[in-house]
Image (cartoon, rainbow, N blue to C red; front, side, top):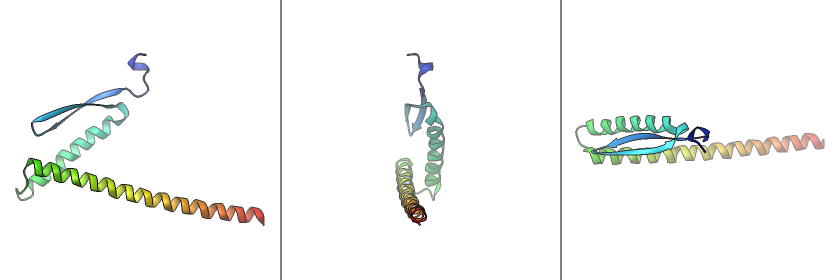
Length: 103
Protein backbone atom coordinates (compact mmCIF):
# COMPACT_ATOMS: atom_id res chain seq x y z
CA UNK A 1 0.00 0.00 0.00
CA UNK A 2 1.40 3.40 -0.94
CA UNK A 3 1.70 6.15 1.62
CA UNK A 4 -0.79 8.24 -0.37
CA UNK A 5 -3.41 5.55 0.22
CA UNK A 6 -2.98 5.64 3.99
CA UNK A 7 -5.84 7.54 5.60
CA UNK A 8 -3.72 9.21 8.27
CA UNK A 9 -0.04 9.23 7.28
CA UNK A 10 2.62 10.27 9.77
CA UNK A 11 4.59 13.49 9.50
CA UNK A 12 7.77 14.56 11.27
CA UNK A 13 7.78 17.19 13.98
CA UNK A 14 11.06 18.40 15.46
CA UNK A 15 11.11 19.41 19.12
CA UNK A 16 14.17 20.89 20.81
CA UNK A 17 14.58 21.14 24.57
CA UNK A 18 17.83 22.38 26.05
CA UNK A 19 20.59 20.92 23.88
CA UNK A 20 18.62 17.89 22.67
CA UNK A 21 16.38 17.57 19.68
CA UNK A 22 13.67 14.99 19.09
CA UNK A 23 12.23 14.09 15.70
CA UNK A 24 8.75 12.77 16.37
CA UNK A 25 6.59 10.88 13.91
CA UNK A 26 3.01 11.98 14.55
CA UNK A 27 -0.31 11.46 12.73
CA UNK A 28 -0.74 14.15 10.10
CA UNK A 29 -4.07 15.30 11.51
CA UNK A 30 -2.40 15.95 14.89
CA UNK A 31 0.66 17.81 13.61
CA UNK A 32 -0.94 21.19 14.35
CA UNK A 33 -1.42 20.25 18.01
CA UNK A 34 2.21 19.19 18.41
CA UNK A 35 3.55 22.34 16.77
CA UNK A 36 1.19 24.68 18.64
CA UNK A 37 1.73 22.85 21.93
CA UNK A 38 5.48 23.03 21.52
CA UNK A 39 5.36 26.80 20.93
CA UNK A 40 3.09 27.39 23.94
CA UNK A 41 5.28 25.13 26.09
CA UNK A 42 8.46 27.02 25.14
CA UNK A 43 6.74 30.36 25.79
CA UNK A 44 5.65 29.22 29.25
CA UNK A 45 9.15 27.89 30.03
CA UNK A 46 10.56 31.32 29.14
CA UNK A 47 8.00 33.01 31.40
CA UNK A 48 9.17 30.85 34.31
CA UNK A 49 12.82 31.57 33.56
CA UNK A 50 12.21 35.34 33.46
CA UNK A 51 10.21 35.32 36.69
CA UNK A 52 12.75 36.98 38.93
CA UNK A 53 15.59 34.89 37.43
CA UNK A 54 14.78 32.25 40.06
CA UNK A 55 14.36 29.23 37.79
CA UNK A 56 16.92 27.65 35.49
CA UNK A 57 16.16 25.61 32.39
CA UNK A 58 15.42 22.32 34.16
CA UNK A 59 13.24 23.93 36.84
CA UNK A 60 11.28 25.94 34.26
CA UNK A 61 10.70 22.84 32.12
CA UNK A 62 9.63 20.84 35.18
CA UNK A 63 7.22 23.54 36.35
CA UNK A 64 5.73 23.89 32.88
CA UNK A 65 5.30 20.11 32.63
CA UNK A 66 3.52 20.00 35.98
CA UNK A 67 1.27 22.89 34.92
CA UNK A 68 0.37 20.95 31.76
CA UNK A 69 -0.50 17.84 33.78
CA UNK A 70 -2.61 19.85 36.22
CA UNK A 71 -4.45 21.49 33.32
CA UNK A 72 -5.15 18.08 31.79
CA UNK A 73 -6.44 16.75 35.11
CA UNK A 74 -8.65 19.81 35.59
CA UNK A 75 -10.02 19.47 32.06
CA UNK A 76 -10.67 15.74 32.60
CA UNK A 77 -12.58 16.54 35.79
CA UNK A 78 -14.66 19.18 33.99
CA UNK A 79 -15.36 16.74 31.17
CA UNK A 80 -16.48 14.08 33.65
CA UNK A 81 -18.81 16.61 35.32
CA UNK A 82 -20.29 17.55 31.93
CA UNK A 83 -20.81 13.89 31.04
CA UNK A 84 -22.59 13.27 34.36
CA UNK A 85 -24.80 16.34 33.82
CA UNK A 86 -25.59 15.21 30.28
CA UNK A 87 -26.49 11.70 31.47
CA UNK A 88 -28.72 13.17 34.18
CA UNK A 89 -30.54 15.32 31.62
CA UNK A 90 -30.95 12.38 29.26
CA UNK A 91 -32.41 10.27 32.10
CA UNK A 92 -34.86 13.07 33.01
CA UNK A 93 -35.83 13.47 29.36
CA UNK A 94 -36.30 9.71 29.07
CA UNK A 95 -38.54 9.71 32.16
CA UNK A 96 -40.57 12.64 30.82
CA UNK A 97 -41.02 10.97 27.42
CA UNK A 98 -41.95 7.65 29.04
CA UNK A 99 -44.51 9.37 31.26
CA UNK A 100 -45.99 11.20 28.28
CA UNK A 101 -46.25 7.99 26.27
CA UNK A 102 -47.92 6.13 29.14
CA UNK A 103 -50.53 8.89 29.67
